Image (tube, rainbow, N blue to C red; front, side, top):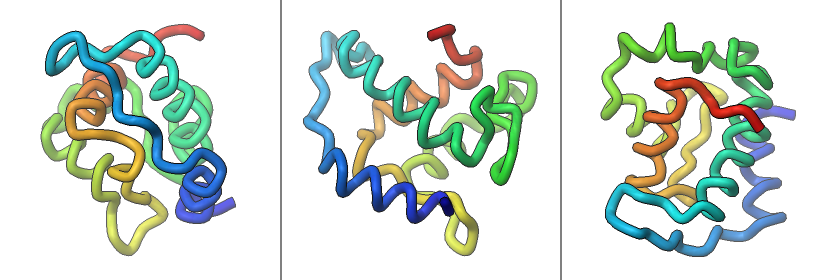
Length: 112
């Protein structure tokens, strides 16, 4: 299924996710981190590969992302890439959560 179509399915199935609980501006509650990790593995993995080593989308592994500007990556996560299969995720993630996703991907996804 195309990434944009998967986004619509996720939106319909889950609705807009509840606002996260923060212990501080950059600290996400463990339950919210688990929700986001699931989203990354399932939704991002559907295009970027289940191990984030690439597929329809480019690889999202530390070796590739280390050279990328994290603010630009955050923008892409939130706003997508018009004209490509990369959808915007701002309906599901706050700016702080998108930053956390980028930091996590730059370090490598934790094991399940």
